[in-house]
Length: 224
Length: 248
Image (cartoon, rainbow over all chains, first blue to last red; front, side, top):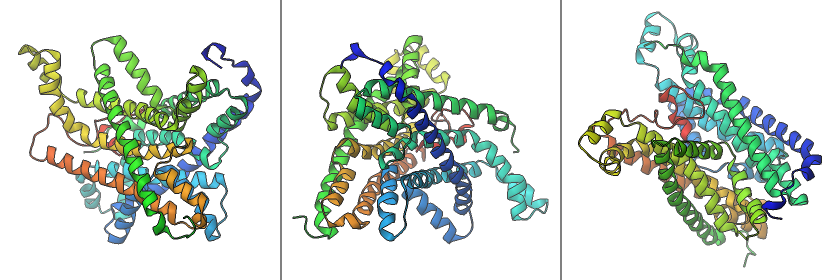
C-alpha cells in the first residue's frame, strides 16, 4: 500500500466500533476525572495543613506519582494487584491508574491556587470571627476554584490524552479499537489519521466547552 | 541463566535498560529542543505564514495522545511510504516530535515574556535580529524558561516508556522481558524496580531544575515575574499564576 491507494471506504463497516471506542475513551476519562478532582482538593488541603504527617503523605504521593510513567502505574495495578488476591479487570485498572496519576497533578494545581490567594483574605476571614472550616468554605475555596478552573481544563485534556495509554492493558477505548482494526485490515494510515483527528476535535471541543462553562467565573474579580 | 527468581540477578539487565532509556531520552530531548527553538522563533516571527504553520503543528501534536503519534510513525508511515522503520528510530522520531511541540510553546512564551521595550531599545541601537535575540532576549528568556522546560523534559522521559510497546527494549521493556522470561512473573519486584528507575531519573531532573531556577533568579531582578505562571499558554487560557502546575 502506498499513499496513492488510500482507501477510506474499506473502513466504513468499522466506524461503529470506532464510535464505541470513542465513547469508552470519554467514559474512562470522565470517571478518572470525577475521582481525581475531589481527591486533588483533599490532597491539596493535606499539603497545606499544619499536620506534619498529612503534609508528608501528600508530598510524597505527588512526587512519586508525578515521576513515574502512567504505563508503569497501569502495569503495576493490572499485573501486580491480582498476585495479592485483588482481582481487577482492565477497565477498573485503567480508570484507577488514570485517577491516581491525575490526582497528583490536580493536587499541585489546586495547591498553586491556594498559594495565589493573598494573605489578607485569611486575615479578613479570621477577623470576622469565622472558624477554620467556615473560612475555607466561604472565603478561600470559592476563590481558589475560580483561579484554578482554567488549569483544571488542561488537566481534563491531559486525562483524555492519557487514556490512550490504557489501551495497552486492554481497555477497549478508541486507541485499542484503532489498533485492533488495523491489525486485521492493515489500513493503519487511514485509521490512525481518523483517530488522531478525533482526538484533536475532542480536545479542542473540551477546551472550548470548558472556556464557555467557566469563562465568567474564571474572569470574575478576586479579593485583594 | 534466568533460573533463579531473585531480583538481584537481574539488576544488571535493568541497569542496562536504564542506560538505554537515558540514551533514548537524551537523543529525543536534544532533537526536540532544537525543533522547539525553531518552532518558538517561528511562533514569534513577523511572518504570518511561519506563525500559522508553527501554531498548527504545535496545537495538533499537543492534541494527539503520544501513543497515537508513536503508532503512526511505527505502523502507518512505513506502510504508506514503503520503508522500514525499526523501533528505535520510530521512538526517537515520535518523542522528538512530541517534545518539539511542547518546547515550541515554552520558547514562544519565554520570548514573549520579554517586554517589547527591550526589543525597541535594542533595535534603536541598531542591533540586527539575531544579535537582539542572542544578547538581549534569549539570556533573559532562558531564565523564565527553566521550570517549564524541566516539566517538558520529565514528561518526555516518562513518555519514552511507551517505546516498550513497539518492541524497543528500554527500561520498561527490559523489566517486562525479565518478568515474562522467568519466575519473577509472580512478584511485584521487577515492576517496582522499574518504577524506581524512572523515579530516580525524573526526580533528579526536577531537583536540578529547582536548583538552576534558584541560582538564576536568586539575585537578579528578572524582566518578568519568574513565577512558574505566565510561561506556557495552556489550551485553556486563564490566570497565569496557576498555569505552572499544569506543566508537568
